[in-house]
Length: 471
Ligand SMILES: Cc1cc2nc3c(=O)[nH]c(=O)nc-3n(C[C@H](O)[C@H](O)[C@H](O)COP(=O)(O)OP(=O)(O)OC[C@H]3O[C@@H](n4cnc5c(N)ncnc54)[C@H](O)[C@@H]3O)c2cc1C
Image 1 (tube, rainbow, N blue to C red):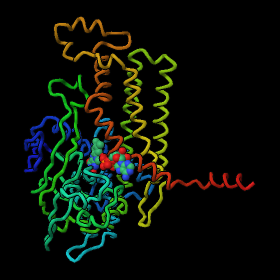
Image 2 (image 1 turned 60 degrees about the vertical axis):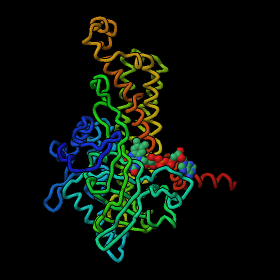
Image 3 (image 1 turned 90 degrees about the vertical axis):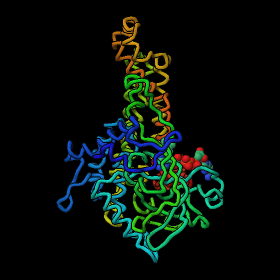
Image 4 (image 1 turned 90 degrees about the horizontal axis):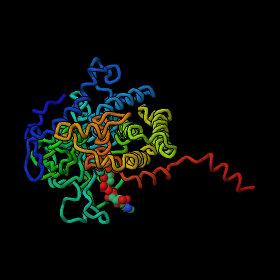
């Protein structure tokens, strides 16, 4: 469990040009409180959220899955955590913790250099995170300065994070990473390079993977603009006033990283392999998609409730739209289950979900989520944008507004709350950021689909095709 006071630890967090004390920003406090549900559930529902190893109790995310049942238990835990924030917190601690579980097992490929043993560093870092249930965020994406040029060809030095010096104690890094969700309230930051945009030969100094406390000197967390509405309450903005997991631009200014926290240094091949070969990619994807499906379920329910309260659900055309949403949900739930059931034991005996099934979810969920929001927008139509602020229920027009908006289906206040939620989910800055998040946070769907096609197993289809073409 984290207390808000712990965030007043000297970390360099900036908001609108000012260096801030994170603990004084109300929306950060609320987000931390919701994020703490990850820790609370370990107490409230230990049979799902914890497991024992060498007589110690750990969060289930840290369990190395050995069987289908292990993966299914993790699924249930991820889902319960996501339900506590309607799937709106993308980077709760379980996301990277499940990656730490496999990193500890699979780090051997990282090798060593003359100063340090990278494989041992990664293993002991992951074990330390697990033993202390430390909250990590991550930054992999390099800034979009000029995607048509190699990183090293961009002169500013901020097209990624690169080593500027090294000695026998560690390395010094400078540069930037484009987006780091949750950075202001996390404890640690894991930095590496994305597997989609591979580094090239000349990018050697950018080929790093390391971890650092957020509060370390030389680490600057520059937040995007906040999306809450301090002049309104949660009846008006039930989502944007409840949480914001904050995306931040991260700048390193000659930050020192001791060797024990360096996992890749000036090694393009290892940097390109880090996320995938460590097993972190596939296991964090599993958590990520369970969370995303939970959010889709929430958005589907909002659409259906809106249709009902506005008296639209008796129309065949509306039912068809809602039926598409429920069918989408069914399909995607089936596919995540398939990713588990079609899993395999990797060469180290880790039960690993099917990548093809997971990638199918990764590439399709953004469209399904978008569709759920669009259906809500189209159904809630003018009433969603014309809904009065909740303050009207206590203002001079209270009786009037109450009478005018009450129907057989809902009281005026129930109706207003729901329409405010619909607006917040689909159309506010918060809602649009959530839509962007689903689209992009797991990588560009264009690349995911391209990979899916390249790895598709079409043996049965091809056999039929060949048979037909032969005759
Ligand atoms: C809300 C949000 C939260 C995020 N949180 C995190 C986080 O916590 N940590 C983190 O590391 N990252 C995070 N990300 C970043 C995310 O990983 C990237 O946005 C995502 O991988 C897409 O990469 P990009 O933004 O660099 O876009 P690009 O890969 O640059 O793509 C942008 C556009 O250019 C096109 N394009 C680019 N290159 C090519 C090419 N070679 N050929 C054809 N078209 C091309 C793409 O199709 C796309 O339309 C977050 C993103 C969002 C939106």
